[in-house]
Length: 99
Image (tube, rainbow, N blue to C red):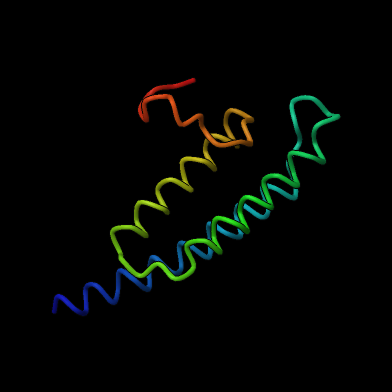
């Protein structure tokens, strides 16, 4: 039964990863920068980062690691959609703080 649970989780994670990738590509395609002059560059950055990050983790098979990656990607989407911030959160800030 445990293997069935892991398999089901893996399938649902795979589905979520595909949905996230599509969501991020759509976000990048429709991105409007706060300063109009930056729109094209920010769109390119969003799409390039998405391709690079998804390719980098393509071979990941650990469900826990995949779950963490999904969570991080979902946070980035929320950050972009709600706050208009297309770039990664600065690494020097504590993870639970707003910037």
